[in-house]
Length: 302
Image 1 (cartoon, rainbow, N blue to C red):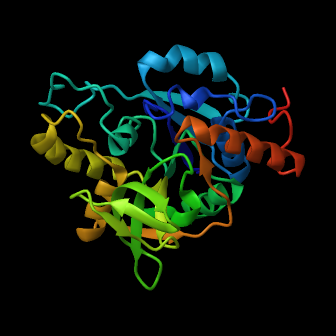
Image 2: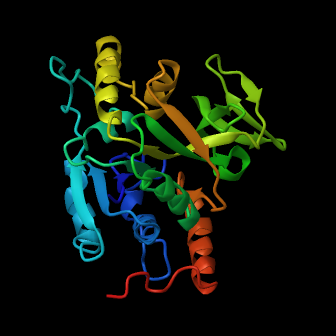
C-alpha cells in the first residue's frame, strides 16, 4: 500500500501577512504546495490529504481545485476550533488553531495506512520525499514506527527575523531521544541563539539537527494522539494561546516506549516563507531549480 501525504495548510500565517499556502512563487505561478505534491507523486505517495480551515476553502479551491486529481487521490480535512475530544468546549477568546498534532488528528477518518506530514509553506526537495516514502512503503511496518527527516539548524534560518524550530537529540543509532521546541532563533553576531523561557539568549550549535515538521507515522499515531490530547485539554483548555504540537506526542511516545522515531538524513535543500521578506529568495531559488532542469515549467503539463 502506498503511503499518504498530509499537508498542513490551516495555519494563519500572521507573520507572512497573507495566505502563503496559495502564493504564486514558481516561474509559472506554482505554489510551494505544487512542488510538494509533484515530488511526493514521483517518490511514490498514493494519496494527499490537505488540512485547511473552512474559512479559506474558497481561496484554496480557486487555486488548486482539481489540479492534482488525475495524478493522485486528493481529500480535504478541516481543522476547526470546535473539533475537540468529547467533553470539551472552545473557550471564549480562542482564535488560533490548536496546533500541528491536532491538525493531524482531524485526518484520522481518512487514513488507514502509513503517512507523512509536512507544512504547506516549506519547500523540502525531492530527496526528502524519496527517503521517507522508502521507509513508509516497507512491507509489514511495525506499529510505532515513526520517522523524522532532519535538517541542520543553520540552514533553516531566515534573514528576515527569528524563527521557531524543534531542536533534536539522537542516540548513537540515529533514533530520536527528544525534540524541544525553541522560539526566537536567529543568527546574532555570527552565532545562532535562541531565547529561553526566561528571555535569555542561549547559544546553540548550528549543525544540530532540527525538525522542519517532515514526519512519518504508522496509523496508531491517531489513537495515541487522542489519548494525549485529552490530557492536554484537561490542563490547557482555558489557555487561549496553548497549542498541541507533534513533537509533544512524539516525545511522550518515545519516553513511554510506545514508538521509536528514526531520524533520516536527506541531501535535499530546505527553504520556506516565514516572513514577506523571504519571498524574493524563494522565487529566485525556484527559478534556478527550473533553469537547471530539476523541475519543468510549467510544473504540470495540462
